[in-house]
Image 1 (tube, rainbow, N blue to C red):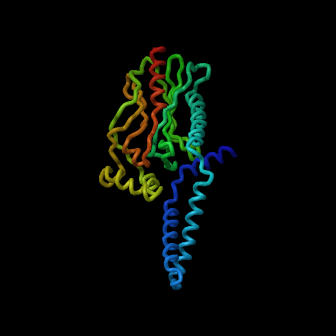
Image 2: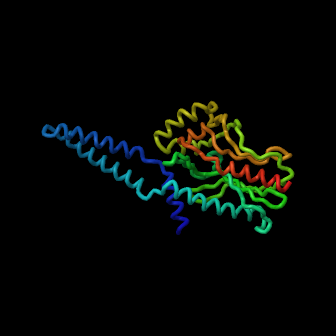
Image 3: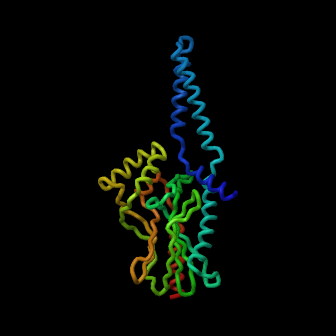
Length: 281
């Protein structure tokens, strides 16, 4: 019951504000104002418009109230995310086939946006009152440590229903790790048509932003866009780049409604992994 309620509330948090409800209030108030101005000289048509205006204003207010009522706070959503990441941390150990007795340190977790190749996951995002951009689905990488190896678990996590997509595991010996860092890269991403439509439908304002931010950068006839300032967490081994996760990009952030995507987890992971490599190589 708790899990079902939690997912319902997370969906409520991400659901976009009903812009048309605000427009209904504005239209209704305008029509009521015109009816009041013509009071005493109102004909049948003016009266009907006044009644329609009253209905529209009330309906808009009810919808806005319904949307805002019981909506979880930014803090509550962050708390639920931490619960899910703790579960994924436990799952990472099991999926890598490790035993708790083999681990020599606390795991580190890195997260980032993932709005491409999402299967049937709902793509949703919201800029909170704290200006932090929250989103689903989320790319998650969990790194565990044994005496000789890094155990890496990766997945795409759907916050709305708790589904796990694209799970994978890797193992790298400390001696084989060449570098671990955050860096800026250029890359192109292709947003599937279904996801593109989901983004555009979230609100008329978001649709306008997509029209200017995404379509203007897209390759002709496709939903492929070029991003030139992608900040990534990258771990490189002697065999080449082994794992990389997108943390943020200014153009991608604009497409997703603006705000800030913190990289605190990635920065902590870099420090911890570097320390573990120095101590265990």
